[in-house]
Length: 331
Image 1 (cartoon, rainbow, N blue to C red):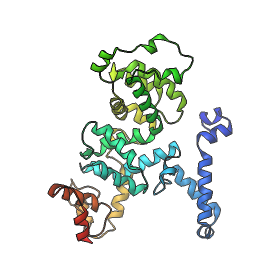
Image 2: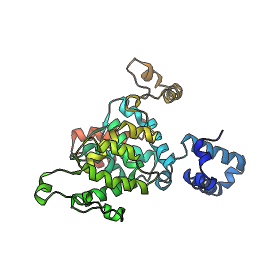
Image 3: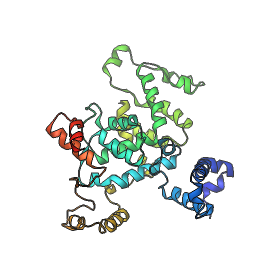
Image 4: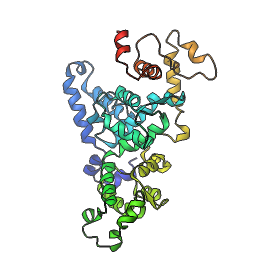
């Protein structure tokens, strides 16, 4: 049975809304690049497996950043993959720096931009130094907002700066607006003593902005709910409120609630099955009730992508944090 949403839209609008053409083009490109291998088991099977992976959200693994951010579904799939792959960081209670979280992101997307990770970390750290430690849950929910709504937040930052300097962004966003209340500004003396901007005026500007960002902005009703609880707020105060809002997380649908963040029975079962096949790891996994479903954080002797992270932590405690000499000695 077709969904009510599908029945209400013409075919071309539905296909555009779901970005079907993006996936068809990507599938064809992959087909042409790997036609010799694909010819062995058939084009029909290739397209079936490709679109099954899109539905399951695994199509974004190890892909370039331009593809990962190309559609809302890709962004949500990447968020879900990051959570499922690295939730044991939070389960073990580990705290990592911004650089270390960026290394984890690059394991799934090699060219993931550092700037985006820095912006997400700033939501958590606020005025603290960027090398401070963060919990997995704090970083994850801040990263979710910054990554999924990145274009929207860039426009929000510009609006905030305009309001902070006494300008009225609504005169540009809504040319027909002539309401006097939009032009009310505190005096220079008052502006110097007040922190942030007026929440009600900020919402008026964001309400118009949401009309232009159909798929990459939070639901306006939830934005209004966030801003209705305060009289004034700063830009990062707004981002923190978004990252902690239960309704925003539900609207995105990529991550579970905070209380369920460390629970993923299907993934736990799969990990236990895989680890049971590795000699030497079974004992460490099942040794006691407090044992995690992953190996302990102490790095094994064999090469592992986690090694630089744990090794960096050790160096930070013993020296100035540089890993260059240690890396050379190991090679």
